[in-house]
Structures are given as structure tokens and as C-alpha cells.
Length: 190
Length: 84
Image (cartoon, rainbow over all chains, first blue to last red; front, side):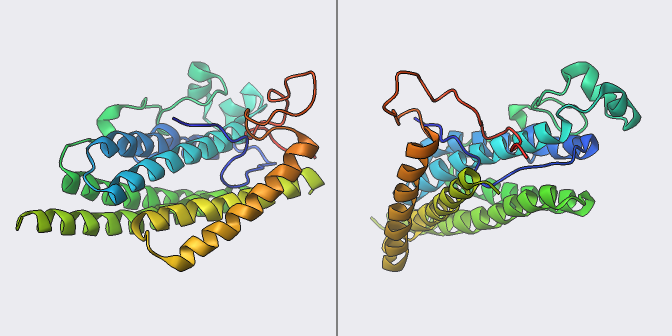
């Protein structure tokens, strides 16, 4: 189970609204390479992980992704909050507004709703861990794109933090894959 | 930055270090240096958390201050902008 800690994993305090940037970042909330997909992927795959290292890694990275989902939601909220509807229309983000208001809804930047079809959970730990390595790189690339189009340090700073976490998770999943392969390899000779 | 935010960000820094070490230890469970760092950061985090909660109220619902009113619902929530 989980307990809630009343803080984000990394500080976020965006002073300047930017609805277009909000919609760009929204893809990391409910898009194909987003934090919700990441969390559900690892928390679902953990049930069939064969070693204690792999169970812990999937459990704990899946949990950290929930904290990242909260960070992304916080950024989207602060970038959209209190922006007048007419301003949203001028910035061409009014189609999102007429469906969801200024709420945070799990979709990608084009408004395509979140779907579990973005993830896979197979019993085979080698297949799962290879998907996880690719997922971390795709999320890292998405953060690169977001950083490329951002210009406010209040936005860039947490995006850089999240990008760095993808790199660390990739490293940990690589170590986990090695451990699982070694363990499964040994079993052949029993 | 106000005193409350400064203290909270110190806790966030130690808690982040702890979580990063936790992931590292999951694949390196015998690394004594990482274990030592984890122990040190844990003591710092718990110490700062005690200070914060006694001054500014609960960070988790499992902290119950000696008051007659449930303080968990009080602002700020993490997604709110800091008041300038």
C-alpha cells in the first residue's frame, strides 16, 4: 500500500502562466511515454518478477513514477491556472478548454485520452525489462523535446530533473536485467 | 524564500537522496558505502521532518499534533503555487 507525503519530489513553483507549454507537457501526464503509463507498466509487471532485486526495482520505480505524475500534473495546473478563456482562445488551446476547462485530464498533447494499450505486462521478465529500458529512453527523448521548446527556468528546471530520473531508471533496469538473466541462466544447470 | 519553504526543500533534498539510494541498493544490496549514506540521510530527514511538523503541521496524516482540530487538510497542498 501507499502513504501520501504532502510534498512534490522536486520543487515546482511556476510564476508565469503558459497554456501552450501546459498542453505540450500534458503528454507526460497521459500520453504514450508519460508518467501514468510508466507507473502502471512497472506496478503491473512487478507481480511476475522472479528475483528479489527485480521485485524491489519494479515496485519502487513504479512508485517513483506516481510522484512524477504528480509533478507533471502540478506543472500543467500552474501553467494553466487562472488564465482567462479568451487568452486560451488566442493561444489556440481553447479546444482543450471547452472539453476539460483548466482541469488536468490524462491525455496526450493532442487530446487523445490515456489508454492501457500504451503498456504491456507479460509474464516473461526479459520481455518486460526490455520494454522498460525502451520506455525510459522514450520518456527521456520526450523530456529532451519539451526542454527544447521551453524558455522559463521555472519550467526547464523540473523538466531537467525528470529527464535525469529517466537516465537513472534506465541504469537500474539494465542492472536488473543482468541480474535476472544471470539467475535464469544458472537455473538451467540445476 | 520563506523559512517554511526552505525547511521543506531541505527535507525534499534528503528524501530524494534516500529514494535514489533505495533504487541503487535494490540492485547493489551489499554496497556498504550506499548503506552508510542511506543511514546518514535517513537520520537527517527524520530530524528535519520532526522540526517541520512541530512548526508547520503534518507532512503525513500519521502525524497528530497536540491540537483539537484535524490539521491534515490545511494548505498548502503540493500543487498550489507558493504565495509570494
